[in-house]
Image (cartoon, rainbow, N blue to C red; front, side):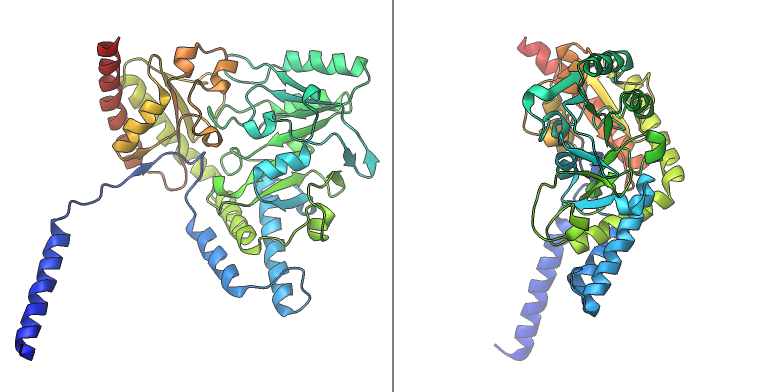
Length: 416
């Protein structure tokens, strides 16, 4: 084959390949509405993470690279503290919020050098599974508190429990989340903390979903400890923080080893992930008010369109203050997992309750605790918005639900 023939043959092959590629159907854009499970990595966090990976260095080393790594971690610590409205020295970096909860939920607590051992762990019935496990409290020391029909902690039940335990000489540690991960309902943390303070108790607050969506102020909340997670705000997965109201608030360490994190969490810090966490914290803090307003508009548009266009839909917790990005909708008689699959096939990503309970088929325990009938609780889906969400995403979800729900109801009716 001559050089010219070879060239013409290669040109033909290239043209065929280009035509094949051009003839392929375009991949539909997916609408991602599951930010409460994990929020896509923000560009700012990605850039900071990659830069820290390239820079290297162990923050415990005294040479130039180590000092630079330490400086990056301390800058991230300041950013996370600012997001939580907490003192910088109160921030302890962990592998995530589950580890932060495990670190906080221990009977041995020390505040400003004074031992304050806790005998009982009180937790609202709608806490995250990571908290309802009780962690290092004995199983018989865990008491679950009821919530009202909107999913808010029952303060009267809390007051009764506090009085009962005080009369028996038992100190209480209360676990109450800032906002529910499934419904978005904001909890009365400050009011609950005031009641706990009256009996010299301790307060732990899971602020994972609230961070970056509503303002946080540890002093105003009255919390002693607060848990955060990076990947819920567009930071990298695998990093979180336990934030203490003061540098001398301590519990028993989970890990023994080196003196990292002021002897509160042993092990070499995951510097690049921590730096990405700090960058995400800075980004959400800077845009908090405007972003909350934007997301509230999108959420309201979503809820209004679903309630108007999909028969039998009901929004959970609509009578309470909620996060601006979260909506949970029930469709009585349908199964949430079936709806999730139907929307996934329509290129819309949503969830059925907590992503940390994925794979479990059945009604949401949060909704059952709120008093919803099982057939409603079993048909509840969560749609959660975030920094990458658009009007197009919301409208795609609405159109998918308008098609999927009647089809699924028709199938259920035929099968009955």
